Amino acid sequence: MYQSIILGSVLLVTLYVLKRMRDPKLNLPSLVRYKFPIIGHTFIFLTNSEEFLKQCRKEYGDIFSLYLWGEVKTFIGKEHLQEVLTKDDSFDAGRAFERLLPLNAMLKHLANFKNSTKVLKEYVINKLRTYTERMQKSLNLATRKYIGDCDEPKTIHNIYNIMTRIICIPIADIFVGQEISQYEEIINTFSEFTNDAVKILRIPPVLDFIYPGLQYYINSAILKLGIYNPAIKHEKVLIKHLKNQIYKRLQEKEKYGDSWKRPEDFLQDLIEEEGFDPNNNINYAEIAQKICLFIFVSIHTTASSCAHVIMDLASRPEHIQELYEEQLEVHKEADENGTLPFETLNNMRKLDSFIKESLRLTQNIATLPHVTLKDYTFANGLQIPKDRPVTLYIDDVYLDESLQGPNPKSFEPFRHLGTNAPVTKVSKNYLLFGGGKHACPGRQLAINEVKFFLHNIILKYNLRTESGKIEEPKMFGPMKLPSDAGIIFEKRK
Ligand code: HEM
Ligand SMILES: *[C@@H]1O[C@H](CO)[C@@H](O)[C@H](O)[C@H]1NC(C)=O
Ligand SMILES: *[C@@H]1O[C@H](CO)[C@@H](O)[C@H](O)[C@H]1NC(C)=O
Image (cartoon, rainbow, N blue to C red; front, side, top):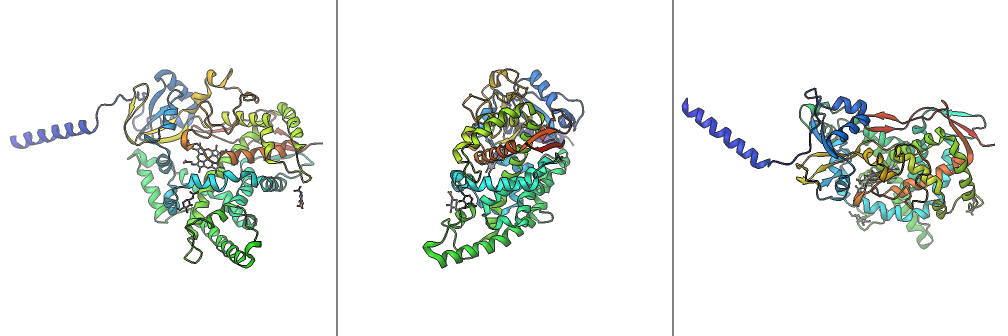
């Protein structure tokens, strides 16, 4: 009896000491107080994150922690968030993202696609000039198809869906080429892949209340076992067309030799990689999954950006005249077919500022999740442990007058004019594309499309909201989604 009490006590003390050694006292940020056990801040964060975060920032300072979905998450304000973006030996975005959406479980070959950013830059971004004409042609064609002439005023309610359909046409053209991007099936895959992939996010991570990370294990197991994997049907469509197309290209190259007209697109660059051997089991699934990755990062982001800007244009018709005059001037450089040279993108200065302002005020209140790779000490001395999820409190940057100029939260379309900082420039006061080494490598492509698209829209139509009022984005937790309020398009007379 005695012995077991002594033994038990020794064991307890040992365990306690061991735990203390493993978990040295850190100077942790304050955990914002909460009333409900388990639920913590989850409910208020989902329903009113804007006011709630503002209040937390005021009471607890630049770095504070919340208890969300059964887990402590640390929020980082304007004074320290650059540390998260630039110290990539301490903060990892990939792992945080994977926990949200197990993309690597959905697309298994991505494990071998380590140089995706380099590939995107070399095969696409460095060649944007050569895509100028094709991009405009396919955008204009798609605009005619999905928005139409609008001789009579036409009301569009689901502008985000329409933008997805429009944006995926030039992107499919660049990635899989002019020939197979004509197939309805391929265009459907480009427009639907992202929405299908994120369906798994519709299950709220309730299992994380039981054990943080449990939802991730279950979701990725479901995907890996193929019980439910939304990527499979899209992969099949891509593989079918890729097989025909690659075969055709190899044949034609052989047949025509030097007089063969080399297709200019991402697919052709992949085929010409050193590791690609046409005589030896071509790995079509791997090619298809590389394309799926780029669909995932490009279509939804670009389409929702376009939808936000168009809603802001329709909400503020008083600024359209000024933009119209600029675009008329720019259009003088167009060729006989109405195609603008690449350089004119730099002359759309007012439009650039308008886009930048619109995307600034529609960026999520808090986003860019990361996970710590080791214990980390911020410049102010606060510390967080390894494996801690952190989220950047973006709005803190956008509420600051010294970073944004006067009235930081009011929409001022020409706020950025003459600042020498176009929308694609990543900086301390503009976080749309993240920052540091990992800042979005596709941003030039995205913004070129938004500009070519809006050039055409502004010259062709008069816009207004159906309500006649300013339509704000829909809030979902800290996220801002494009409003589905009606927009009236009417042909300019
Ligand atoms: C307006 C549209 C877009 C927005 C707002 C956007 C935003 C972002 C953001 C915030 C990041 C994370 C950056 C960081 O961690 O610091 C990112 C990463 C990335 N984006 Fe974009 N993006 C857009 C369009 C595109 C397009 C069109 C492509 C390519 C076709 C693309 C490809 C990528 C890739 C490959 C990464 C991962 C980079 C890495 O991990 O190193 N994005 N994007
Ligand atoms: C990316 O990696 C593949 C091999 O995995 C290689 O063949 C290709 O040249 C690389 N691309 C770039 C742009 O570095
Ligand atoms: C205009 O389009 C026609 C037909 O597509 C083409 O033949 C011509 O070369 C184009 N003009 C220019 C300047 O690109």
